[in-house]
Length: 341
Ligand code: PEP
Ligand code: MN
Image (cartoon, rainbow, N blue to C red; front, side, top):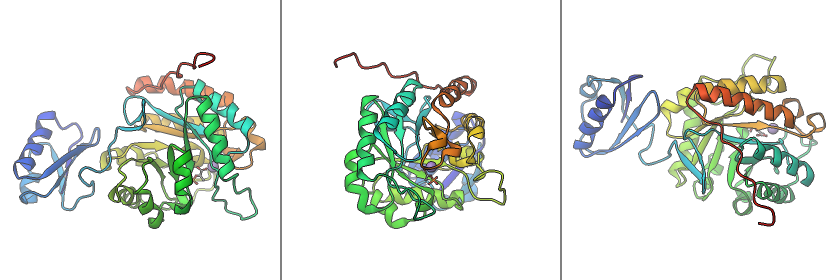
């Protein structure tokens, strides 16, 4: 069952509920910030009404929406790189890996702003079959080299389970795009991967469906899942998607996974990216995924929503101020490797 505590419930109230459930032999797990959730698996069934009357409890639901032992808010992605803690996890890069030189320029800019991940697509799920489909394996190796030169992780989108062996060899984090969020065959396969999975929200997915997709990966053996809000389709046409900022605090209370935001696909418009990045951070996002390009107007995909490298630097410095107000930190750039090392 899931016990939802009231916003601002005290530590004594929370541990009181945990103790009662644990005394009944249940496996108990707590998650969430602000709104704390307690999940209990097994043990003696307690009448829901009795639990609902305990001090600090907002509601009690049967079933297990947050499976015990699956998923953690604070996640180590690689030695020394965590998401879900005090530090904001910044990932950026061009929509598509386009070439060696541009990836090096982007990676340098990401690292110089305290970013931890270089992200670009090598396999692109384009709307038109005639549009640029990505550089494939060659693009992945270019990403790897650029990321290694600047101490960054490689994040790239997987379209098909057949790509897993190669991508697991080259990448550090596998992105599942909006178009594949409902692909349970792929999600199950990713449950067997040793790499963390960055799961974007489907463009017409409810929060519950999205959490269900994350649980597919977790339930099949891989609890290292990050959720990424990237906007949903609505009647609004002024923006590419409608970025659902409310989903961020909602997920932080309802799921055990860290939550990122992608204001690039969330808006489709470069001038809206920095304001929505700041809003996402203020709403509790654990990280940001942003599209950047040395020459956005020449980008092979998603140029209209890509910041240039100076724009990205300015955005990150504005995030530093917001971070201070919400008790988060934008990491300082990693120290450059000594020459010749
Ligand atoms: C992307 O990240 O470039 C992408 C295709 O995103 P989404 O799946 O959110 O549309
Ligand atoms: Mn894109």
